[in-house]
Length: 146
Image (cartoon, rainbow, N blue to C red; front, side, top):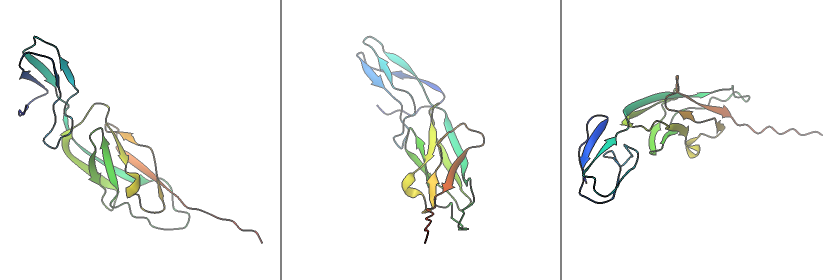
C-alpha cells in the first residue's frame, strides 16, 4: 500500500487479517520500525522516525610522520541502518539530506573509500556532538641494520 505520511504518528486503515507494516521513504529506506497487526484490527498507528539532516566532519587525529598531506576529500560516509551515503569535501566535512533516522543510527567511513595512507577510526552515533569521524595515519616503517 502506498500512502503519503505526515507527522510523527500516522493511522493506517487495513483490511481484516494479519499484517506486517513498515513505513519506507520514497528512496526505500526504513521510516518506522516493523509493526505486526493481528486478525480483527482495522487500523494501526505507525510511529515514524524523525526526519533529520545530518552534518559532520572527518578529521585526521595524528600528524603524518612522513610529512605527507593526505586529502580528506571523496571519502564516503555511510548511515546505518539505511545505507545512505554522503561524500566528504576537501576539509573533511560531509552532509546528509533530510532522511528518516532510527534512534540507534550510526555513521562510519566506508573502508574502500579511504585514500592510501589512512586507516579507519571508530564509528559514531548520529546524535554525537560534535559529530566527528576519525582517521589515522598508516605508514609502514622498516628498519634495516647493516
